[in-house]
Length: 379
Image 1 (cartoon, rainbow, N blue to C red):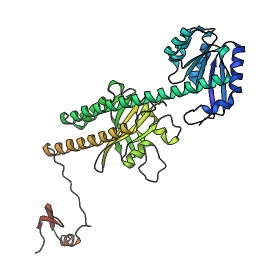
Image 2: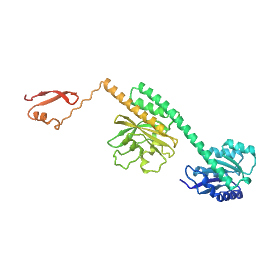
Image 3: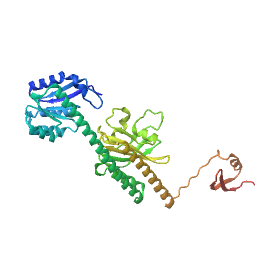
Image 4: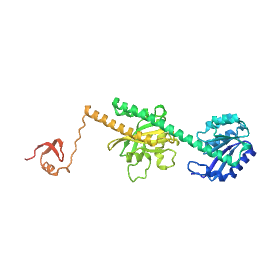
């Protein structure tokens, strides 16, 4: 974790900017009060921009802990300046630091999105650190509240999807229809950005998309993986196939083992991906790959629902295939020869035009009884 407090100061007055920087440097012994997600900074790093456009550009390119904003800038003034910065920041706290001692302006600034409103000629180093501390703390609480709300919404939506898929299991007649319905439901109402089901080729150790729904489905390609338990392939896809368990990774992770499956999310690095096995007992039918735009997607409760969903789909596919086998009018007949089974019977047919034909098999508690007939075999 960083030991620096990264401060973006957007201030056009060089004298005021220098004074604020000196305040922060002089109050460094108060920095230990600030909690940056578990880290206590020992010093501050001040990034100074003189106009709003440069400040917005800096925000888009760097991780900033807090913004100190003057409302009177060369390219923007008043509350419009604050509103612009608020629109460009999601969870970065903003402290208005201005020369205007205006109570109404301060109240409106807080309502728009500022964490605090400070008047320059009343600010001390300790007061500024104190304001930054509470701005960051309030921002962290708000971020946690939003995260919990999003997780709850995701769980509620996922439960509704599960109910729809359960209905589809009853009404669909083919595996292809079921899988398409699953993918379509998963991307409903932008719950997930992309969903696709892959078919596993265990010989070539590749997975190929069968059906897909959502955005950028054309970008999906075959993805290699390794089934070898000693393999260095630690990608989430390979892990999910080997273990039969759901696997989740963030596409922003800088890990070369993840390169083969980055195309599953269209190449962007700000998403989360879940790989959900579709299985019945020990047989793995395929993998559901689900991509979300939120880096915090797929919480533990969400994973549990997706995992159960994979089991439900696996049971449904098994039921569809068994039904097709029972009512279908296609017969598959296999014929093979072997000399390694029941050598005594094989020896009886070794001379002349002799044969033994097995016609039926009955499995008992501790034995198997085979019925058949012989031709040309001496009694």
